[in-house]
Figure 1 (cartoon, rainbow, N blue to C red):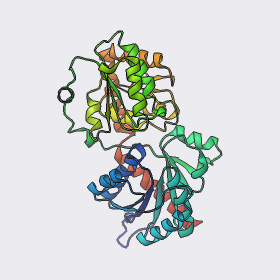
Figure 2 (figure 1 turned 90 degrees about the horizontal axis):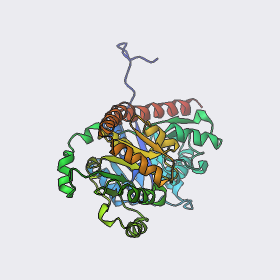
Figure 3 (figure 1 turned 90 degrees about the vertical axis):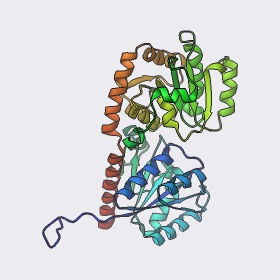
Figure 4 (figure 1 turned 180 degrees about the vertical axis):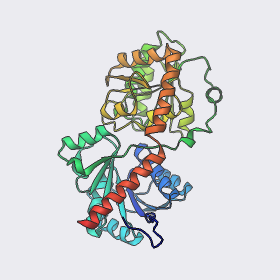
Length: 373
């Protein structure tokens, strides 16, 4: 181990991390990339984003003082993207290129080869390996995603788990549940459930609506909040009408204060039917002390502990979903206990500090490997 002249062990030097991401929306993966960058900068590292023009994402970065450059790097047929990224990585003096999602991971890895800069790709879902195999290291958001990549032939020694992390202080100044319900004009004594997610078929909102129709036979005052925007909004609104549950469902669109809305819910639900890497909204719910119900899928199994912090149900089964939600609604003491266990577990496993520390470890690891190869 190297020591300084006075015999002390010097602190590792700060790094310059080029983060590459190219989505059109601001959702789970994008939020995690922003939170990680903010945490890294607090520890003295420099983080620079290369992204396609995304107004919302760029605004979030600007508010946090994170450098961002919109570049023409989107599209898997964009053969100029890796050359532009390689030049940009050299220009900013990047030590590491950290990519998020498939297109960015494809071109970022090629750019790393061109510029001789090590690359790490965050895998946020049960993706096909194609766009990730060129990166020097994969960082999966859960053990379930890690096993999914290994089943496709990616060597296990090239995959590490880096759990998504949240800043617990972001949950401290949220108004009380009663105050939020008053603001939303929700009766304080009515059962309220909901989902916060991009409105798409894979997130299972249709399954939740069908479960709501079943739950109303026992809880006629129940309210369901759908928070999020997406291509499935019109379809969901039609389904609400078809089921005759217009008075019980609010499709609220994108809300920057989604965590506050979640605080009004008795049960937070994520009934995904496919490719859920971890289920960050379930972790947010846990930080709020909310019991959760999620689909029995690899990533979600790590976001909650069934019977202790929430309940797992078979994907695509409205009756099973309704039964699980009803079990929690009918047992307030169990709901409180699940929320308490969930908060403690989230603080232990899914903190922002933990994610930042893990990222630093992985950056140093690939730098060592790269410099000795």
